Image 1 (cartoon, helix red, strand yellow):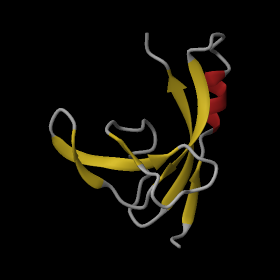
Image 2: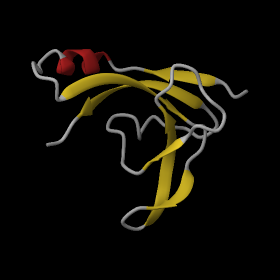
Image 3: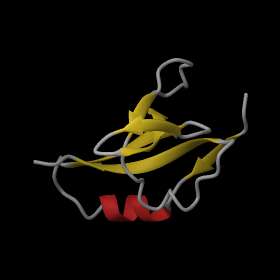
Image 4: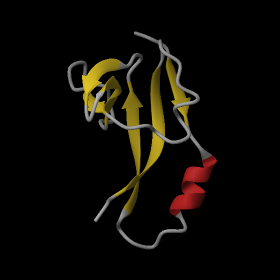
Length: 90
């Protein structure tokens, strides 16, 4: 199994504490050790993610967007467990 890096931002809890409604949730994501080719609005590469507590071998979903504050830290070859703020759009 690859080495797992934990990426967490203190600012996540600070920002989340500013919201008082249910449109913002703090969650945990696993980000796979490599990106894959995918097609959204155009041909691109996507993160493979899971929202499970434990990594399931064949349960990866494609994530088509950037992950703010994480993209600069991402290095292929490592599986990451990251805290994220999930904002539900109306």
